[in-house]
Length: 437
Image (cartoon, rainbow, N blue to C red):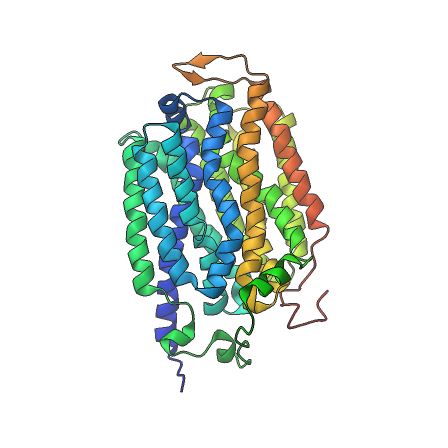
């Protein structure tokens, strides 16, 4: 007989959430940290913008390729197993990256970091589907992205200050050790379902029948997910809006502010910190607003429109350091934060049994976008670069960055276009409520 002690249940589910969110915050830190150490990486390995973009994007290449497998792992072996192994691999990769003496070794380390953290987010989101009510999923998703972005915020201004005290190599070795500690905590504290602690499922607690157990091989579920046309607009949406945002803030924004506007790393980090904070807050607000309105499509469309307008402003407005630039970077993060609603949308246009795979598919779009955006931006800059160097570090002009900003606008326009084809779920799962349109 399953019993439900509300106090014990709350303590357990928030403990599980805390362990998984800590791993996710670390993944976000790794995602944005290259922007702060771009000059050191260029100097250490003697590379130009295109090669730097490829090194930073190594994380995203494997992260992208692993999203569908991560969904399969979350839906079959569970979040506990996948996140534990992922933290171990990411820890080893971070240590290798910090100790690397060659570009090849650094690329391998960055690859392993991406491989390890690739399973963390999907595992966390899958865990949220079984430990939290469907009615709160948008809000919990927003909270998840808000907290995860604390890792991104730490990789901006705070990291710039930290690098005044420690070198970048020591930092990444320390991050590797932290990841391995999180692996131990994941195995010790995380469980995949409330039933493993003797609780009823969330649906049973709410007076609904439990989901039927999986009755076929996961490959059939994966085929059903890939064949679900309602999921693909969310894939393209995240490809365009968040792929370009992560690519910009995670690598190119700081060098642009340094080369074009003469800011130091610390001064430039103020602008990326503002964008990241706005993005984090927007994730929470967008998720909560979407739940309150019981609307997914309208929130996603509004965010894409704001994001595109800001990208056009960065390209065409005569902005410089100061209040105007702070407003542009803040609005950039604000518009981008709407992407979190795409996860709720993905869950609601897919049968609950394989929500992990559905979320993973949409997430693949995000990281494929970043993986392509970072090196493409660098390639666009290198096309007309005059070869100017300062202390061995390539220096690029305004027109070099403008070629990259055209790419930013194109990605943003793609997201807005995709939002036209999203299905409105009204905050309910369409497989359980067929009348949703």
